[in-house]
Length: 460
Image 1 (spheres, helix red, strand yellow):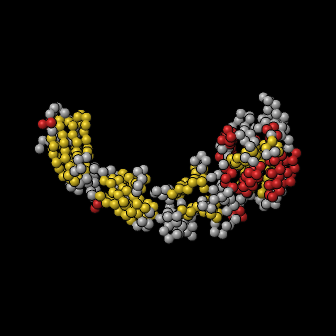
Image 2: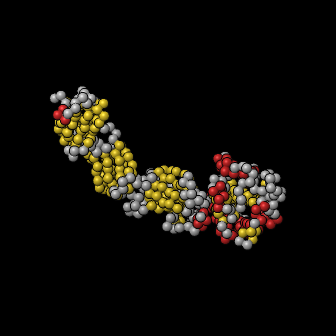
Image 3: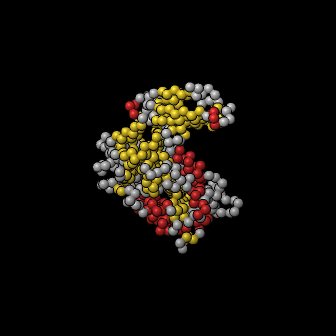
């Protein structure tokens, strides 16, 4: 569940060495609480009515927010003005009860204490109206929606939320669900950062962390550790994914600044993330949870890289051009990457197998890659077979292991042409399509040498 975020795992991340609080540099913040006072909030939850529990716990949090520099609060309520009547719900029942101001915590608490849960649930319209509640000043604008139900007015909160975020009016809203039915929880994932409060204790903890994140920034860095324990590895792409829906939260090219420190990335600590460092093979960390209000480190040991150079011996020109070489991690049948021959490839330390799709293929096993070292893998330059047949027929070229290198099976093609082959001994087997006896088979052995052309004709 999402509230598992409240219990950070030091195995996944650690605070900065000084545990520094980075909130001093945070910009002014406006937090708008959008509060559900629809009829369903009269239902009992952990022995009390939902609206009483939510009002009381939000009031306690507001008391702790008093006097925070640069913080302005406001309260919008929906469902509190018109009594719910089946088929006649008031979808305009949404009101900015307490406008934005500094130090208005007590006013919001008093307004909460007077609320009565009466009407319907116009979430989309409340979010749309909320855009007009914020000031025009350059500040961090945050919506915290507290609700126990889903949209009841045939509008789409997801569309409204996306429009607000794209226009830069607000950051991704926080939604705290109070005893929401399991079937409805997914409907809130697209609206914003959804938390499922299964009981009052969980609601209190979620509310604290959401407010904390709304006020204070959170950041992290990715430390790629070399063979001597330094975070010196860099210049690789990184992807941060939302672990819930696998959507990309951020992508960047890892960089070391002038002081040699990795990038500082601002992050929303509410979701759980998966992180991929696109080395070869990739380094991955699943279930990353960032501790709010501090600078986190995601550390990858053994990130040192060496260089593989797959090449033809002597570097002569050949007909293969940019041959696509395939790399395998030792013991793994799944290919890691395909890359052109004669191109340097950075790899994590380890043992690899290299496949050259030549004719016949060349498979080089147990290539050792060590940090900051070049490991060349060279295979012989190919030669050329110039084949002249002049007649349609059935044919094949077999290598010294009697395996097929080229094949003409239909009898509808002339095998004449130029073929690039690795050095070695071969046999050409041929029979014209019109010939109906093995007595007319043409069998000829030949040898291919690097950089040389061998001519073969079935007539000579």
